[in-house]
Image 1: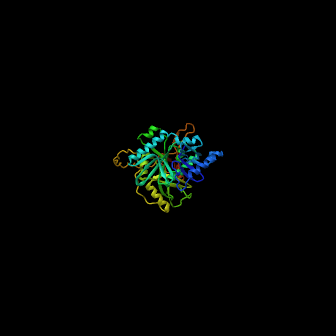
Image 2 (image 1 turned 90 degrees about the horizontal axis):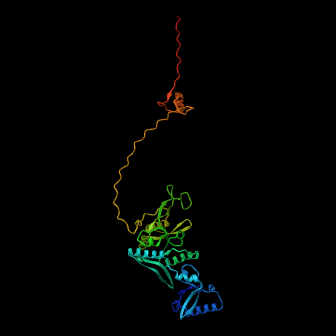
Image 3 (image 1 turned 180 degrees about the vertical axis):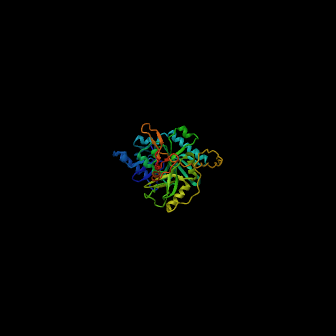
Length: 387
């Protein structure tokens, strides 16, 4: 059973706890809708073909859960057609989900911010159900949604509608999961941590965020750039930005989103629009780049890098290192001495004798191990007198 019903034809939400169904401009609305539903029941019209659906949990999850009306003890009730839709309202919350909610509130309170779990915010004639709502600085409201269970494709399609509804009403959606498949979706701003047991989530240790937080690297597209041109050209000469993954700690993420140090952005890469969390300095530089990409945006005031909740005192500056000793230049290598190898034992024989003309042709410099040969001048014959 549920107290909020969605009328498909009228496209309005009906609050059964109010006499006028929260629509005072339509007098007699309950009598009309209840009589129509009774008429459908007497005619044998299936509940799935009627006009009423679950407007609470089912609509938030993107599930079309058909319902019918009844009166019991003078009280109005809306009954689900299927039992599995009814169990969505009473499904027990996992221990990991509760541990994340408690950790978000503990991290917010340590930073001086308030918050509460399972907050139902009234927005006009509808409601916004938030797992954990943190009241940040300067009126910021961060709505943390923990998604640890597996949902179908229709439920995933409802995530964007739910996040967009929260953003339109002043709540910054922040979805956290431990599933890699969910973290790769671009329907809302997500963060991901490793899948951990309950006792590791609940304790005051360092819980690291491994996906969702980025650091923007701004560069000029010239021949000295390290990244390829995102426009598909060789070098376009414009300024670009590249999002690089950066780790953060979960507790610091909760506090810095509350202060506005870390903000959500939409980063376009090619034909895909990604949703990341970045520092406010990178967000401002990205806005400057989008307005004028002919030059690099000026440097902004850098925010301190994310650090763990319990940080150690900064260490003193190490003493300067002594200059490295330069090695003396090595002497040039001597020219190898040509040897002849014996064909039988492959041992070097005596040094090769080269003629000076051969050395000049081969441009080799003679060494002490190379012996040169000269033409022997013929000795003149001497005639001796006969005896």
